[in-house]
Length: 314
Image 1 (tube, one colour):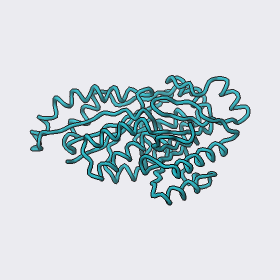
Image 2 (tube, one colour):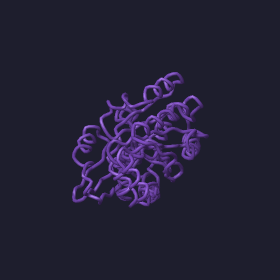
Image 3 (cartoon, helix red, strand yellow):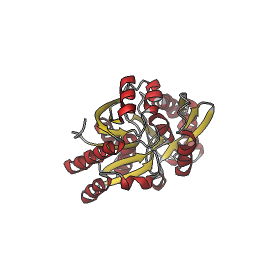
Image 4 (cartoon, one colour):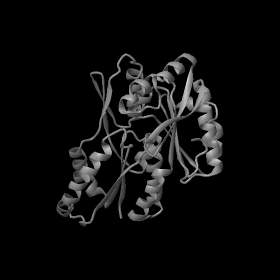
């Protein structure tokens, strides 16, 4: 059985991993002021975007334009129902985007129309799909997508893979350290994210106090505050190192950075985390932060995620 994985472009996976495992990506269009920018998880485009758009603090207005119901339906009927026999669609948390709702609506039409499409192409008619909200974002969504690929490679059936993914949704923990609080306060808050209020923004900007944000099961909130970005990422990586040694539910840690990736090895705690991962055969998947993520959390932010039943920092 051919089993595929579909994600949206807010999923922070390396392009090489996406290409190697034939993961299908739904682009997200960003409207920043009067400009329209497409997020397609292209590393070169993403780095150019960091340089040309993310420093425009005077532009408060930014929104994402996800695939519509019709676009998702067309993607399936023109491509996915022919390339695969079963597809897992993993979306960013429904609390931040209508992608999950749109995919659910599209799935109803897809399941009534796919038979004729496959019949006309001479493909056996049976096809299935599952739409899952990751209840998370960015690197958290990436952990679940990597786990899905891992389960497919192990020969799991769709029912077995679906059951495991639903468990992992609740066990996925994403942490994020912003370098600049402006974008979270001004932009993410417009989507209902109250993780940084005015007082925290004012105090943090004045004293260089950085929050460590935690996302799990659709909720995002600060779990720690530190003085300075370097101290924040050091705590982030130290926590991941401890969690790796304590135990993970799947052998992946996903990291994304809103800047040049060659800066990561110079960040405190990063190399120690890599050593701990290598000792336990854990894959650390590193990617540029998506445009969709970076426009809401700001340039220079670091995001890290894993799946664990008892996270050491929460």
